[in-house]
Length: 219
Image (cartoon, rainbow, N blue to C red):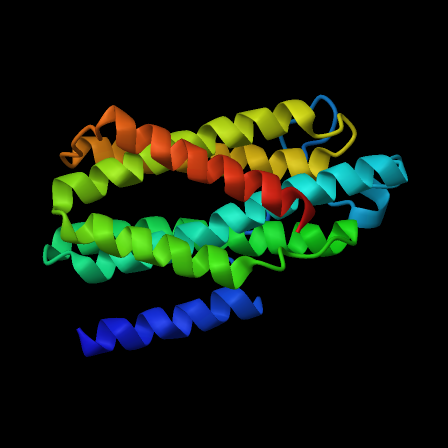
């Protein structure tokens, strides 16, 4: 337990300081008529974006970055709380994907000239607390919490795909891959025996998520 807490503290510092590195390369937009990514720079890809479009993309990617900060906290707390080594490995594997997402959105914020949320320490602490509580309710409920979280993230990402400027192909490529990963996490948790959360809990989670996303859009 002490080792897990030390690892969790280290990851919290890395998450909040921006000291994370992706294991997978950042998703790139494909060339017209080709499924293969084209190796252009961010400046070239973003040259057609207006200042207003860059500002909107920056705000949306900041929200996505906050979501990944929260995911790091949730998965770390749930991994500490479980006594099942198989589930712990599953949570840690999902957390590694979320680390990629965190690094990708962080890089994209820099390319857009946008900043991360000023309230990231608050989002992290709140999410860690929720993950810790969910984890101590039992593995099936912890997995149910994970499923509902991922479904809500998928909905947010779908909304962002609709709102991102059509010309912001770099952000769209990142969001698209994130959506694929989140759906897989939810499916794996469902297969592992996730319980369906009560309606009131799901609505409460959605209400908190709305507060976070609307605040992070600006702060």
